[in-house]
Image (cartoon, rainbow, N blue to C red):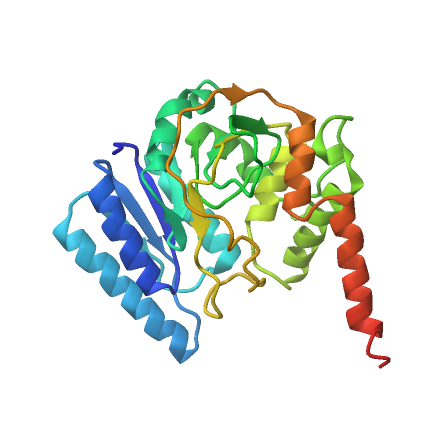
Length: 296
């Protein structure tokens, strides 16, 4: 149980939105903010948006703790999310951020209760709930950040707000011992940012991740994953429809010691998140085969 405010970022997934809201009203005592992006111009998107809008309005009519904002038009996977988080932190100084397609249990609230001070004292940028498989059996700090359920402060969000919107944003080479010192890490994030700039994808998290690295921030991660991404579907805004993390389960939070920042743990994360040199070479080889392997 928690009294911390929570933001739910929603778009075109009415079934998952309904489950998330029901769970949050049951498990929490604080405000639940819901930001629903508007529909695209096709009939299917408008149908899904109508279903989501009905779910939000019905839930809010039954529970005064639900505060919502419904966008009249589609802002997209980049600016819709940024608008949601901006709106949230115009009203709150600290809070939990979820998308409607994130599976979670009440372990996230125990984790936030234990480590909120790390953020509010300025010792960490965020608390990240998803662990892609680092088997440390302890909570740990990384220079990285992940969007699949997290918590931060309005002050921290404000500190990166301008940079994540900078059209010239890139991950700059950092000092040895920081992930940004590694070519593969810079290449991974900068390639996504370049696709955003060209209009090929409309995402927001690579820009946050890049800025976190540039500003040498750290985030706290749990020993086991407390969340799971459920929103792999054609209606989703994600370009990658491969579920790389289907083996990850949502765990209860177990109180652990916090391991200090170690670059060896950063490197383990990078291998798991496919942003290591080995992954870079593997992806390049895969793309080469796709382009030339057929002989066309």
